[in-house]
Image (cartoon, rainbow, N blue to C red; front, side, top):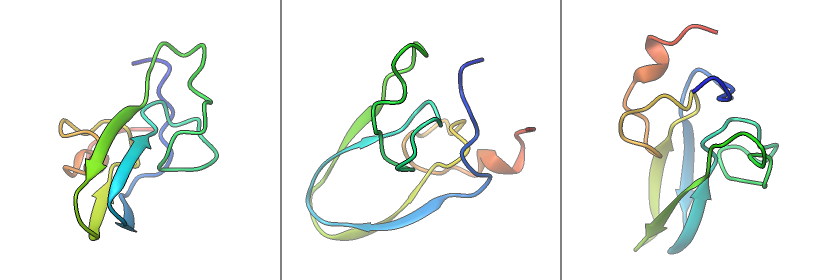
Length: 80
């Protein structure tokens, strides 16, 4: 996990339309919380998830959630 960059220490609250999305796992994307390809060379791949209906999500910003891509409160316990 040494290649992970903490993008922010709180979740990204996003309302998403139905479709497939790629959540940035490495923290290097400039399009947080979504992948922009910046993970190349980190050994970390983005996580694909599908939205079935328009809904609000809390996506992990610290990249340490046990429920990736969703926030589980792990940001309260990670150090910079």
